[in-house]
Image (cartoon, rainbow, N blue to C red; front, side, top):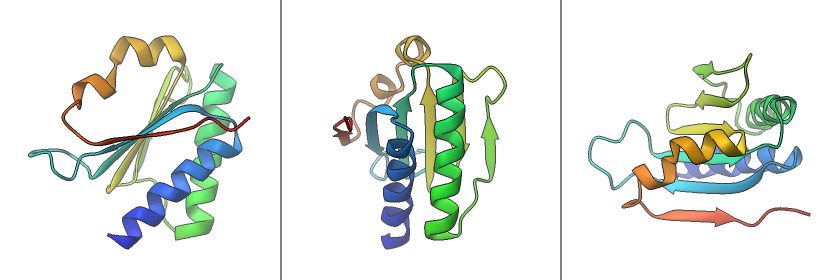
Amino acid sequence: METTNKLVDSITKGIQEKKGQNITIVDLRGIDGAITSYFVICQGGSPSQVEAITDSVEEVVRTTTGEKPSNVNGLGNSQWVAMDYIDAMVHVFLPETRQFYNLENLWEDAPMTHIPDLD
């Protein structure tokens, strides 16, 4: 549990270091059949920012927890990058792609924490 909290904190820090916006942490632990404990969802303003956020998350998590993602999908077009850390999945979107897939709405029964954007 504490390890998972440290992981989620590290992911959030990695997102914030590259000015990722509109961070939402979705707690899926109480949802039957959920594939992970947490979703951390954010957005970047351009494909290059989406990639920079992804790289930053990978770096911060590795140096803080020693963990590496088991899988990273979506690099290349960088409209939606998904990083799988087993206990947490990170979703880095372009704003229009995020709006289209609306993951928060899919999991609306789960507790959500909205992290204020850093200026």
